Image 1: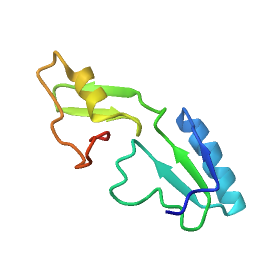
Image 2 (image 1 turned 180 degrees about the horizontal axis):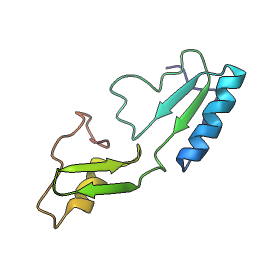
Image 3 (image 1 turned 60 degrees about the horizontal axis):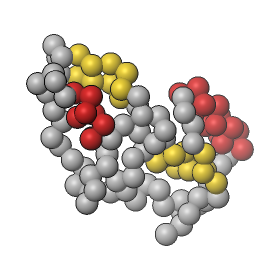
Image 4 (image 1 turned 90 degrees about the horizontal axis):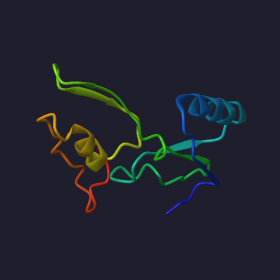
Length: 104
């Protein structure tokens, strides 16, 4: 396990953009973290850098019942999405395969 040098918790797209621009200018690696499934090992910061913990970006922006689509921020969990969908007749049954299945 190679931890990052720092962790930030942006809460908006604008904050992500500002932090990413700063990291880019300083040539600092960026490691995104959404809901913690970790299936890809993406949080392993082999070259250090800054972990962008996006779990606080958990808004469900748009739901279209007509075409079965939903726009979510990266911190939305499957359980939160299903809670939002309750009463619509829709649900999101697909898990990520992790034991706790925290992600969408």
